[in-house]
Length: 447
Length: 85
Image (cartoon, rainbow over all chains, first blue to last red; front, side, top):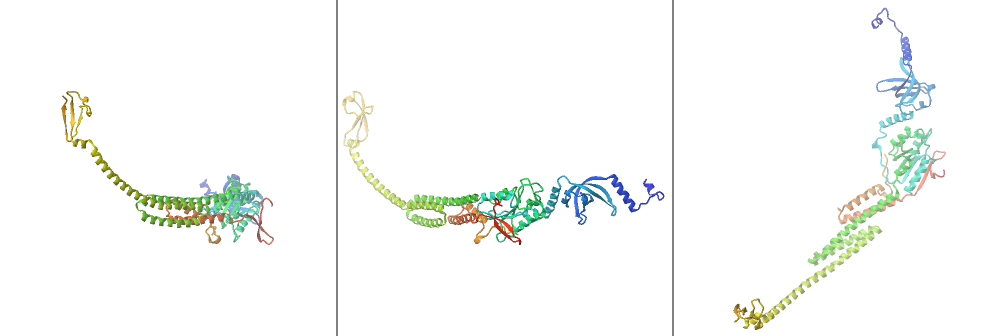
């Protein structure tokens, strides 16, 4: 076959038109109407005709496509670069260029809806630009005094938001920059309102809430439009995005500094409860007073310990030093008391009383010391008196005692059992008795 | 780009900075590492900060406004009540 084809005798030479036509017919016959999925690129809409031209591509190949104005229905308005779609069309060849192309008759999104495909495409593009970077996120002010709101003036969102704000922080300033939040022109109004609040100098809000209540994907669409996303990203004031319900995610959320699931939740995020702040401050005040009181207690205890122990040993010197320390303390306490709030003042006053009481211990200590010394002297004198009294008694006792009698020549006689013999009848004949004299003793047998 | 710190009135530090400083002071006072002089100085400064912060909590009046454009495009603020459109 190949060999035959290149034989000069049997060969058929096509004109370009002929061949192109043949390819075209073959394609139309063999391939015909198909569905094809790919990503849109090089999208352009011809101004005069309204026809749309684009390329469908995947990782390895691309295919030219055309969507004629007459074939366009609802979805076509959403087409944009980056969208992944499924197109139904006829494969043909555009003969003037010899280019294979798809004449699109109908479009549906690849996998997700067309809006979502557009969402994904824009998200990817802005992400690559860095608009959603975490490094761009700014912290919200802890205590905003002026909150700017961008939403509809007559939706449920502003009502909910103001209700929550009033409950959490009654004295707050709120400025609403009204904007339509759905339908044609909504995105432009939202972007303009964000810019307007940013321009409110010098009374600019500290923080913005941008959002709306729940709705369908189409209702929320304005918050996925590029101009809204860019306005949020460009805001000099930190932005909380609060669009729809918990499950709704918009590009506005990605660009904002903080995303809140609902407008009410945004109101909760934007400012803490006034009472919580008040409790926090009161707690700090209390902690400081307690820390000071603890220290004063400690000093007082040391003061008392010193007064009761060392004072007895070195009364004079210590008293002077202690008095000085106390004067010093008094001075510092006076300063602290002056600065303190009423509660603290009472506490310090009480501490001052306690310290004064500790101070009162000082003269007492001195007195105790003096008494101690006197007591010791008195005890010594008493001991001396007792000792000499005892000497006299001893002499008297010695004069009256048996030894002195024996020395005068008397003796003591005892039975074998040790009983003193006072009666001759106490001893029988033959009994042995012991007789004690002044010096020594002897035994005798009674006859 | 944004001037974010809510600084302002009479050259005092903003609420956030004041609260942060206050927390530091409390932590140091509670640590027990301060001498009596420093303790009392911290106490005095802390009391001032508590007052400053408390004042800030109440230094703004409740005010709900809506921005409206007149025919010439000039923007002005008017009181706003969402229940009475």
